[in-house]
Image 1 (cartoon, rainbow, N blue to C red):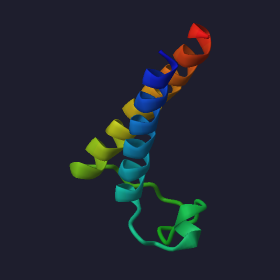
Image 2: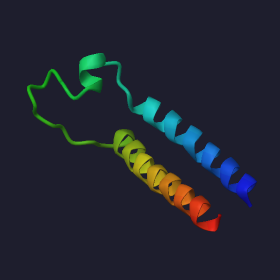
Image 3: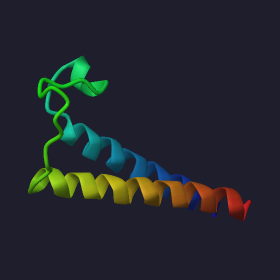
Length: 74
């Protein structure tokens, strides 16, 4: 059972990293740390960007649930 949790958590983790890297727009280190050229004005996510954001949230919740389940089963 431990091997199954390790495989699933590894797959979900790799997918999570890929989805997060797809969201990066190449704005530089300042955008990565929270700074932006927009003067602090947030913009609305639309289309593919919104979908990737929602997938990221879903995968992170799934990853957390898998890790908690793996510890609980031991």
